[in-house]
Image 1 (cartoon, rainbow over the protein chains, first blue to last red):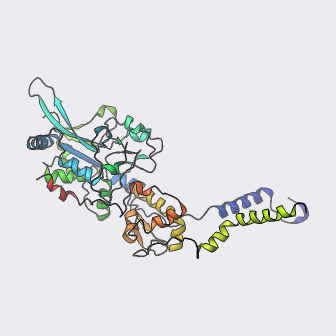
Image 2 (cartoon, each protein chain N blue to C red):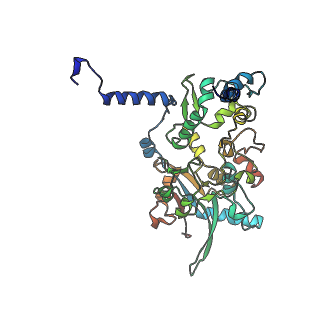
Image 3 (cartoon, rainbow over the protein chains, first blue to last red):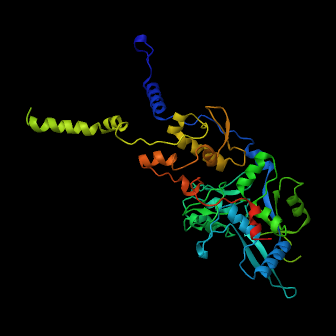
Length: 275
Length: 142
């Protein structure tokens, strides 16, 4: 603008400034404190990858002993009870409403000779390429940089796409208020509500706690398995070559469930098939 | 002015109604009900006025920290009032605020809102025994 020699503000600039001033007045100041990260996601990804190894022989032995002792085919072994109590997993009489984070499956190996029955624990496999995360509409399901697949219950709308996508049937839906089915409460783990999906988290609260303290994390099922069972479950860090689980994976033939799907599950079964 | 005898009283009634919040609040101290909250046992993470206005913002940030940044060790909340560090968890709140009924519910019931936080999250008013760790399972398995 050349008129009058006065430095007038252009209309464009005036509108931008006015807009910014209005926005500044309307938007309330948000939280100023910043999250302090101990590590970056890239560092976590290169340092830690949680996985579990199951010794099927020991698991079968423990289950057979327990069934012989109680005479109940559907008895819950220490790992499952510990998981339910640790993670506030409710128990309902009616099985179709009953959420399960970990369950024991009975398999039959049908060979002409040496036909064998064995028991394996089934839980969330914490896949490297989790199909449940791909299909989640609200990005409630996500994979942490340390490999744990977690659900943000605040975002879960209960559409159950993830339950259909999961090839392992690891997820359960809360058809009822889970509080009705709880006898004890663990304050460190949130309960769930009606209408969200839940599954095993590898006891993520224990892992975060242990990492913050610089200890070795151990999920509730593994702890109970070593205390009351035969020590069939081993949990550890795959990125650490000296960890117990890395050794097991090096020295054994391990089986992943439905590996042909390309999900790369991280629960490994050793001695599956009786070898 | 036409119909003075109707118009002026109606204007007065309208104004009385229009300014209800002002005179109601002015009278609330002496006649009405003001929610009374139990004094917490310790210092809050931020100052009291900021917390009264923005506690949901804080909880939202804690939620993001706890769920999304747990792997990166991002559950540390750095207070901008006291400069201290806190663990981002609702259980941190319960360390000072011992009762939900005597603190949270006082205001929330008064203004008629029902946050869904406690549908899932633990509160001290849940009258169920606490789980004490895997050692207590020895009663089931020997």
